[in-house]
Image 1: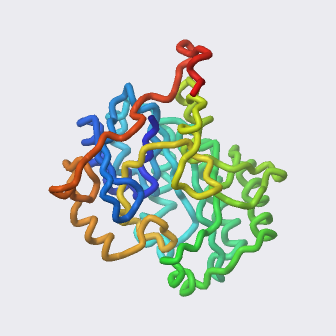
Image 2: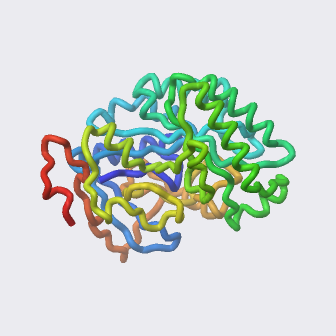
Amino acid sequence: MIISASRRTDIPAFYSEWFMNRIKEGYLISRNGSYMSNNLYKVLLTPDIVDCIAFWTKNPIPMLPRLDELKDYMYYFQFTLTGYGRDIEHNIPDKPTVIIPAFQELSSKIGPDRVIWRYDPILISDKYSVEYHFEAFSQIAERLNGYTKKCVFSFIDKYYWINESMRKLGVKEISDEVMRDISIKIRDIAKDNGMVVATCAEGIDLDELGIGHNACIDKELIEKLTGGKIKELKKYLEHTGQREACRCVISKETGTRNTCKNGCVYCYANDSEKKLMDNISKYDPNSPILCDVIGPDEVVKDASDMKSIVIKDSQMSIFDFKE
């Protein structure tokens, strides 16, 4: 079983105490992806079941002193680091003096294979022009040289709840031609700094440019890190509920929507300031569920398929890969 921590919020930045408490307790409770869902599931977190944890963050600093508490688990980080200022990402600490050193420290602790740099989403405006992105990307890449081996990028998806924010910022449409030009430049800068690049859930095909489609919950990476093979079963390799172009292996979500405090105007996981404030007020680091309350009539079910899906080479047989 693979744990996603989390597409819905920044657990390392804001809820690392809660997550480490759940690791100690050996389980958590999660709602399914629907905003108003009353489907609650208990997800076990014991090392014999959890094959890998994928963390998503813009600021891992609160978790850095506690990585030893994850010594029995394999994990990696998707680390978003862009060139935007606080007009776009309101609550991110200073990047040159705080966040980039945190990236370097994290990589030094766990290795460059386990820290994936995300430069996304790319939006274009008069302030954040194509040329601005080239300069910002180049400066960041130079400082991350040797600290990561892969950069993932994507272009802005305009969810309806961010349309007004995008209009106020003067965000422009990006043509396929401009996307290709940006992609080529990013590819070349990354290569000069020892990195390969891939896109995240993008419809545009850049294979001929040597730019593939990324999987954030990455089968190949997880197999490399764990030294095994993920069972070739359809139910494990198709992640329902994600965007059409998503290549992720199926995972168990741990977070709660409308809880991220990074304040990014392009956020897909926060759609209401009122919900955000309400959910944050419910935060209890000792609760089994993040920023939520289980109602008296709600029933918690055991999540399905709570078992290891990675088979180590010494354990494989021809029967392991049959439905």
